[in-house]
Image 1 (tube, rainbow, N blue to C red):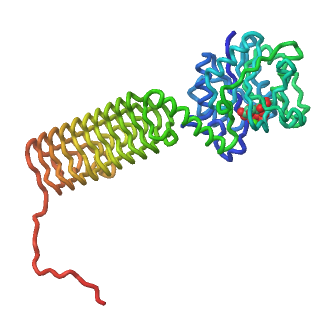
Image 2 (tube, rainbow, N blue to C red):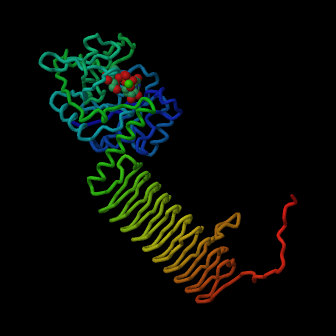
Image 3 (cartoon, rainbow, N blue to C red):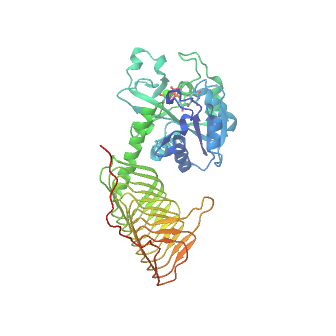
Amino acid sequence: MDLCVCILAAGQGKRMNSSLPKVLHPIGGQPMIGHVLVAASQLTTARPVIIHGHGGAQLQAFYANHDLIWVAQEAQLGTGHAMLQALPVLPSDALVLILYGDVPLLSVPTLRRLVNAAEADGFSLLTVTLDDPSGYGRIVRDAHGHILRIVEHKDASADELRLREVNTGIMAIRAEFLHRWLPALRSENAQGEYYLTDCVAMAVEAGIPVAGVTAANAVEVTGVNDRQQQAMLERAFQRIQAEELMRGGVTLRDPARVDIRGELVCGRDVCVDVNVVFEGRVVLGDGVRIGPGCFIREAVLSEGVEVLANTVLEQATVGANSKIGPFARIRPETVLGPDVHIGNFVEVKKSAIAAGSKVNHLSYIGDAEIGQAVNVGAGTITCNYDGAYKHRTVIEDEAFIGSDTQLVAPVRVGKGATVAAGTTVTEDVEPGRLVISRVRQKTIAGYQRPRKNK
Ligand code: UD1
Ligand code: CA
């Protein structure tokens, strides 16, 4: 039977107090509903159905490039009403997996178990047992343990409220059953809503057994209603990622103090110190060490690279055994070769620096091409911007740039040339030459410094 995924995402998320639709709020840098879509894509190739309401336009705009089936639920009259809106797009010979856009951490193995449990009779329900079940629909079973019905918290008797097995809301059900039962739902209950959960009693009445599947843990079925729950799931998600990395051989000095908002690919014996944030896809080669307090986004670091404390690195490629930081800023479109040293308070933007070159202190290198074995002295500035256009600076192999140099681009320093400290380079320097543009030092005798009158 073909599997079709339906994602409920029409709720307002009032308690988020946000102008962003709830399901677009991120966990690990990805919208909650994005996690659900990733899980869905691992289960079936069928286009997912998204039931939207509040913030639907924003949601559709965000996923404009995705192949999704959009179903509008104009008024939020309950989960049963939401699924009723989707009926026209559900082929009646499909098995429907119903997920929530605000339950982001469901694991694929759990969903597979749920889908498999529905194979025989066409209806399975994901449940979980909680110490504090308040707010949730309770699973009512008969003396033999067969599921009879779900009673919502607000409709439950005192006895039923003591049940700790709850409905996660996630279920797998034949579309054929939904077509039969959803139009028959009534809203005579404490909330005046059409409850999807009433399908359980309808199945039992029709003699169709409902299979209960237990979730692996409470976290994977936890929904987000407010910022506190979002923060709680964020920590849980980061913990899951950290544990996966450690299993793969990565040293995390403190697994509670690393945040991965994207994909982190690590070689062998990578070590990450505390308070490091990774964003987007980051690749760390064998033996890479990341110091404390670094921010690294969309970067590829080859083996043996060492990034020292408080360094920011974005959209850059770093060659083997290079050393960067502390307090360095590597900006987009930077390509560093092997054995390059970038030291403290150095900013590099859209530049290529080849093997063995060093920029160790207090410099700005922008729109530059630096060859091999170049030494750039402290306080060197590429003057790359004339107020309208950016210009390139080229420094050829083995050049030596003295401290406090300004390179007014476009300009080229030839191979092996030497620029004396304090020079403003405005014209190209021939290979092997020394260039100096420094005012000759004068000494004035008998000088009196001004003094304040008392
Ligand atoms: C529902 C279940 C309850 C279960 C709980 C788990 C019903 C009647 N109850 O509770 O048994 O314990 O989930 O969290 O199904 N939604 C819509 N349209 C609507 C209403 C809801 O799209 O008209 C979406 C929400 O955006 C949310 C999900 O459905 O993603 C669940 O809605 P919510 O109101 O949180 O669940 P309850 O009805 O309280
Ligand atoms: Ca709820």
